[in-house]
Length: 255
Image 1 (tube, rainbow, N blue to C red):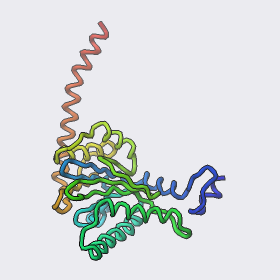
Image 2: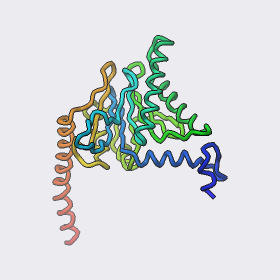
Image 3: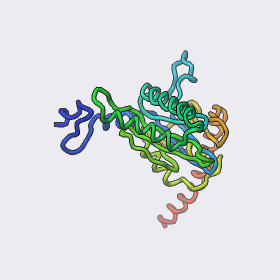
């Protein structure tokens, strides 16, 4: 029965599903993981980095991009779809600046991107964008983090994840997020959350930070390696502390 309804994007199934939108969400779930964390004065994006071919320039394969001077975006899903949506968002930023002589807010650009994604869920002869985005930026000095998905839904978050195993990462963020995180703590939390589903090392992790009035900065591999090494050292220390306690508890139980 479902097969007769998943061919047309504009037709609901009897139980209220738009199958093409659900398939687009499935494409997102198969995409590389992306994490966003909002600190007190910083915004962090961390993404899973795919292994590039030996002769390929890794700078041309980015999952974190700049939309405007104060707005950046990370995505999970189809890269080609993301490129089209990113170009539309950049054009809207320029158009907004030329028309109103002001920079657009993060909320405005989020609603614009979500609006385009929603439009492609009810137009014949088109298909939904197979991407979910994490959008960061500063509105009047306040850090903002938003998410959009293929259905056109958008919402604001303190920390969130999208892509492969995003549920596991989101659960970790829910347990470990704290309000008004310092810069270093926000970066470490984003990397820790990503390492829940990604192998450790700068080869597999891409991290970018954004501060108010400062351009987006990608952390160099050496800095990422230092953060990962510190996280691994903390884990080892925690194992050593729990080891003797667990052993003594076991001995007590035997007695």
